[in-house]
Image 1 (cartoon, one colour):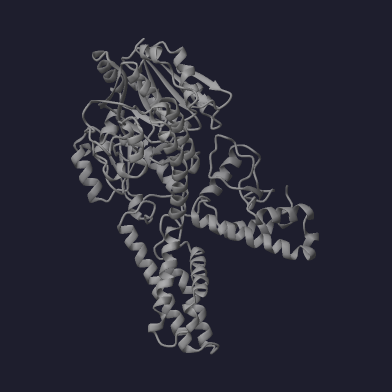
Image 2 (spheres, rainbow, N blue to C red):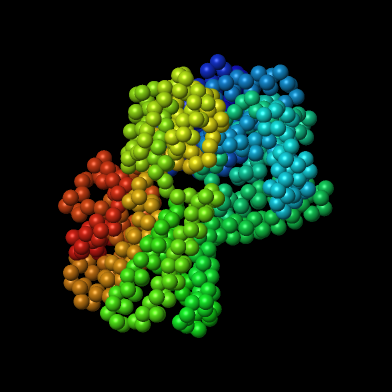
Amino acid sequence: MELSVVIVNYNVKAYLEQCLRTVEKAMQGVEGEVFVVDNQSTDGSVDMVKEKFPWVKLIANADNVGFSRANNQAIREAQGDHVLLLNPDTVVGEDVFRSVIDFMNANPKIGGLGVKMIDGTGHFLPESKRGLPTPQVAFFKIIGLTRLFPKSRLFGRYHLGHLPENEAAPIEILSGACMFLRKRTLDEVGLLDESFFMYGEDIDLSYRITLGGYQNWYYPAARIIHYKGESTKKSSVNYVFVFYNAMAIFAKKHFTARSAGIFPALINGSIYLSAAAALIRRFVERTFLLLLDLLLVFGTLALAPVVPHRWPFIQEVGVDLLIGGLVVGWSALFGAYDRPLRPFAPLLAMLAPAALLAGLLWQGRLDSEVVVDLITMMSVWAFAATAMRAVLFQLRIKGLGIRRKERERVLAIGTTAEAKRALALLWQTHFGLGRTVAVEPRTEEAGLERLRERIQRERIGEVVFCAQDMAWSTIIDQLEKLRRRGTEFKIAQPDVSFIIGPSSIESLQDLFVLPEHSVKDPGAQRNRRILDLGVSVAVLLTFPLLAWTFAAPRQALQNAWNVLWGRRTWVGYASPLPEEVRLPNLPSSVLPPLPADELPPPGLLRDRVNVLYAKDQRPLQDLRTVIRSWRTLGNS
């Protein structure tokens, strides 16, 4: 047998299904076997594999045993001359397996091999080729020299930036996302070290392969898509601790004796520095706009003395902070800090106070000069904040984009039938599309240059490849060559049951992309919280007088308290939600979306009610539900 493919899965069912479809195509002409080791997924992955891929050798663990141990379970049963460790969030071309096996057979000194990986946007992933993280290499990465000089032979060795990305070459470290290994090499150097729960095991095994007298190679003729850790949030503090703990294990195992304790100390220091940096980065990312708006408020107040009739107290720091807090807090209610950006939110936020001031002026309750001063300062800040958002958008800062209509312009590459089905699915998950274009594969219009020109000319926001009509290798090739800032690339599965993008899964069950009124929208979340707080305060304040109106007064009081602290919400999904219906998370609800007498029994109809609520939740409707179901606010 030539090849044994091992895929370790944990709660990424849609990615796993796509991966297995590509693996099935790539195995044609290759004598081999495929293992899926599931680490106690709860998203229906095991049932999906059994139903759709009965030829896969499935190992369903009762616990999450970690990446290394799960891989070793399958490796011990593998019969292939070569073993491939493959992440489930990958897409492989039809020629990858055959090409790699032939290359390894022609070079018997190769013990392990890595391929060229691109992400879901078509960009090259530098971890496709890495150097050994020696104390020096780790130090350069930690202090930032690797990022400043990525192609330097000295400073850029972590990702071997000096090696061309399209030339095959010996390397030191392979990526565990796609790691071809010779079985006899594993028999000699050992399997994955199970002391690594996640991360670091690929570095350790790669190093042991070189210590065993074999070579690791980077082979860019074989390309894959790697969505790069969709199940792992690499900006999280937990990720930082897990990753650097793995590095500490590696350092203690291989470098401690030679580095006299310097490298372990460096690694331990990196753990805390990186964790602190992750916390600071996340804080700055989430509060970046708010902090900029505060600075604009302070700047506006600092300019106040140049205008007549200013009050001296506005120069006091404490009052400036109070005014700044009131401004940004009020603006937040109008979505000034939602993502994507709402560029005119500051202007909208200032309209209501300006109207109030104008009304007071009309009634003669305020001095006209005072009103002019206040409106002038508010206007200056609002226009400055709006201009700042326009500048940030033009600078293309990640996470600070503006929701544009161009994003609704979709180009589908596939036959008429498949393109129509894909666009229909997108229409449902997007709640309508703008301009849509379908291009038949294997025509002049589907050529790379024609596609590139059309995407740019028609300002296409999304390109969807229909996998039913295109080879996976062609999709990978076009994804890499058509990459363009501002355009998303997605793959519609052969039966168009779902569409996968770099950070989304779109289907009627996995509604990760939702319209403005969805429960996932920042504005909807804010409105929900305001409604929850308002109703809870009303219940608590009027309880002594209205307790008799509740069917269960004590439970209603308890519910109001829990909702006030965010542990529950007044209106939400009709429980229970089946595992196969994946919707954005909400706190457990007191009331379902519909009154009890209108709610269908558990089953498909109730699931549909939950889906519709997730896609189109409106605060006024929730308020009506609360009023109509007032007596049952004591539901448990």
